[in-house]
Length: 69
Image (cartoon, rainbow, N blue to C red):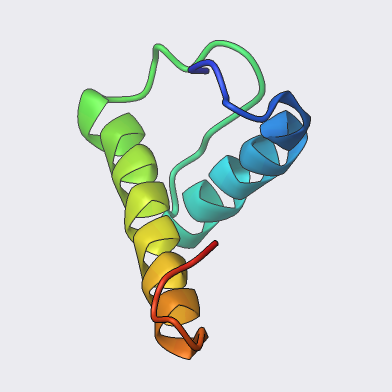
């Protein structure tokens, strides 16, 4: 996993990764996943980014200044 700016977020990001994999039907397991296709692995990461952007946009639209702090 890539280095996180907030190390305490590691467990939450791991949980998020497995949650997204379940939603997409990707059989992600702890440890080595080299038996999965690049497409499957990439779809998990791509969908994680999509969900994070959606959450940011939602929070930004609800804040008085229009941007997250």
